[in-house]
Length: 421
Picture 1 (cartoon, rainbow, N blue to C red):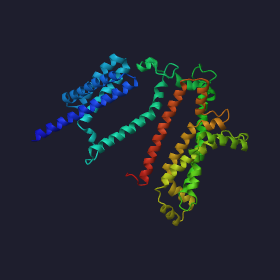
Picture 2: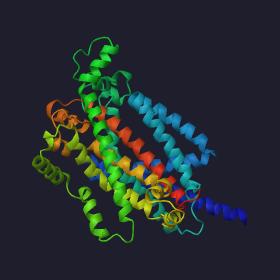
Picture 3: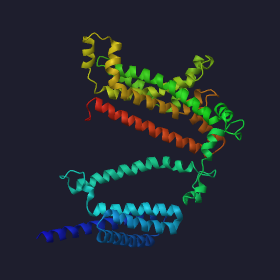
Picture 4: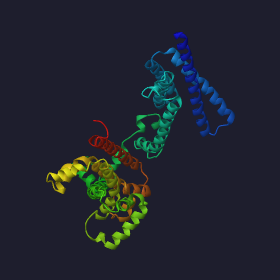
């Protein structure tokens, strides 16, 4: 009796697996053929042949191999050989990765490992919706991140093009170079071909345009972040108090720079600064720092306010009952608990300043060239892959900052008891 049940379950599993891979491969071929604008008969034939081959390959994998690791090794070797003959080193790498993923996916479906980690009470429709939701999120993620990831390999192109060359696609080492990263150091120097001694680095520090733009961005971002974090934290503390009148209206006004189109904000700041004559005050970067602080304050207010939502105000009353004044209460009680939110808001304010170009174009002086403004000038005057190198560096910096924000968010939740230690 048990052997009959096992045979029935194995047959049902085979039917499900083979049908699933046949339909999935047919769908992939349909998308590819539609992109190529192929005829109906050609597309139907390709879908039928691919479905049969995919179902046959899945049947062979689960019938011949008992171990998923062995199947992945064997199929990966086959993909390596076929890819090497079809497309060289690049094809070999792509073929190996694709073959290994296919073998893993076949065993994952056939032995129903997709149920691992899910509650036992879920129905088939609920399991289907779970993975449909994950697939939709993955598609959206790829749609958003793919244009960013494309620029990273292009920044290593040895040729002055914004396209992948044949050598790059074949993973030929001669098709890659760091010349555009080196150009970030030498562009604008008086003597870029001199020996790279201390005088060469001094020349780069004083005259290289990208280095000067980086210095300006860091200086402006630092001071605007300090100002935005200070003012935003004070505003968030005030807005978190229940006795604060017109809290909603004040909040709407304070976060309006994040909602209003940036071109309107830049135009308004330009006329406002012109009326004040701020450019005649003799303080470098003042207009841009104030403008970027205006743009960063909403992010600080939102993050600190979100941190204060779970704050226990009885702690401040207890500190006051023990004789602590307002400043001591803030420094010793409130600040340690809301510090992750403050730092997160500061990071967002810094990224906002570091990435902003429209306001700088309106209110910045000629010598206040930031990295985004230098990139804008480079696109207008001389299109160079060095822009891709800068973009790659900015992407890496953004990833590091966002990772820091996420770690701080988790720490804040642990401190507030939202998640277990």
